[in-house]
Length: 239
Image (cartoon, rainbow, N blue to C red):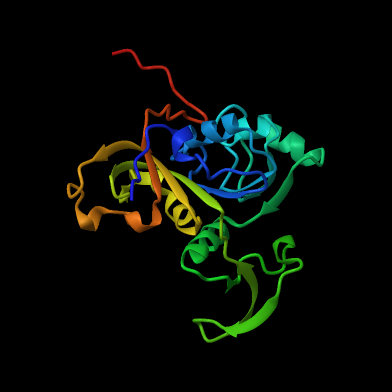
């Protein structure tokens, strides 16, 4: 199976449609699939639902899709860096499903493992638990506590960004840029990855591979901006 494509547009060809659920890797602007997000914007698809830790910033990441009104719903855990996100939400233009950060990661991972639902204590007694099934279980400490059921995420498409790959789709992520990329990739029925470098098959140490190529269906290599959300510097002290 050919997995390597020349451009993000080619890699997404035939995969995009309106009303899709897309799982996107990244945390803030770290490890986001910026080239694939740009290609989605250029495709013009709309009414999208994104499962992503956040929505980037106003002019980068998923923020560029909010600007063009292509996103209908966000399933996220943090959205504090995006003014347009806030405006659309407060004006009733954008639906938001908030998730505790660990719950969102586990929902993705569960979907990738074929698990349709699981129970967690996180969110019990808060708005997060409203409308969800509650059940009592004996926990690891021997005490009985209330848990709520969360559903696994089964995305139509996953888009992720990695550091290195071989042509079979085995991926290695660089440090904290791994973040949500692994569970996001796992929960997609189809996964497209963008990487900084594609290396020869067999050159990646098996024990160093973070995501096996069986999860990755299409792959591109590209140049990345790697923007920083908030750059804080101090004046250099005189010698």
